[in-house]
Image 1 (tube, rainbow over the protein chains, first blue to last red):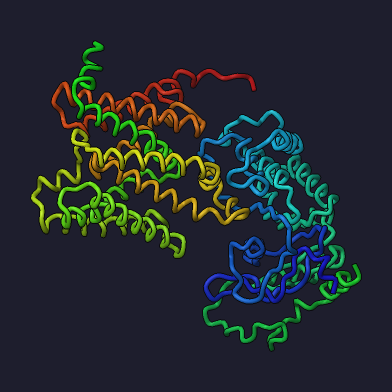
Image 2 (image 1 turned 90 degrees about the horizontal axis):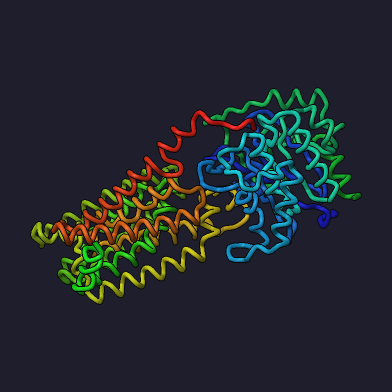
Length: 272
Length: 288
């Protein structure tokens, strides 16, 4: 196994709430420098997977292994940003310097240059001193992308970054994501717009609690696979049987997760 | 005029001590109040002020009206309540407002019970409302220590506090320092309330913390400026309160807090972001 080429490895990862799994026995590597769309119906565990990778939710079983020394940037679906807090755009974007400067490090001229450059890149030049409570939804999202830029992360997780974002802004943000991909950063994006996925994302993970399929987008985005994901029952059942084993060899049905595209992906992972 | 403002402090040592005490207190508790307000925890200060009562009362019960045991007791009770409420909110589904309310109400009842075991209602009044005109060396040293420690902690944790207020989820994704920042901050709240209670009492010390902060919010949209402004308002209202108390023989604690209250009302009306300004500029706009 070419483990050195994995930015992220799921091994039998189960994440959930209470006793109910939201992500069930997910296994596989996310290649370094890959750009992956995570798709699936509401409640299929996409956001939970993101939180699991960040470490906000601890696994019920299995593990996520991130390659050592990687910086991670995470843009949540529902941010907890306090828009009424008296901060300017540059303060918000400046939080992205935390991994570099920490609690006490001084910002130098290079940092200020980076901030200016990041705001430029997302089309917010001149917005430095605007209070954040005067930004529109799209402008705020651009600012948050600028913060991700400033973080200079190796592994970037974006949870539904295009929600309620207009076409122009979406196109700009997609261009940024492709730029990151070009710089060999690993990017995982939760997306609902399947057209966007087909057009811009080389790899796709179809999630419906378990992995329905995972591999090259053109192989994965087939009508039969997507139909299977749509049939997914998102309800929790209090009378559902307990999941017996926690090892990958456990005796319950993993057929879906071991479908052909996954095998193909694993094959590519080995050959890469 | 100058005589009215300066003479009381020149002539009487107790006035000078009182002034030094409240100035030191303003320097640390006003910035703490700004962060409490920005974190929408304005009422948490009030809750914590109630929460330190049983500790202070225990000190009072065991050692009489002595500053050090009452302070240490108050500190312990406050930290217990802050930790308990914070832990419940971080480890269970309950939010901090509910857990804080539960803990401080229990704590307050315990405190009243302890005070009633011994003291008369005069003693209770002293614990609740303080006596800024009777600050001794011990009390002043304590307040100075608290003030310096608070300012140092605020400067060290500044960036963390801003991040934890502005985007706590982001802070969690890049650093594990969030909970530490939160608990140290709650500790600072307790510390400053305890420092204030000898001068202003457990109930009014929260007034010096919150009112200048609430007033400063109407003047600026920058956190650092807001903290400095809150300190200035705190010092000005403390001085004004002491003078009013001297010239009109009013109780000093309420005089100080009401002075801050006056600044608050003036700020609501005439602040840079106050009502009058908003009304005046409402119909004027630029083309872009």
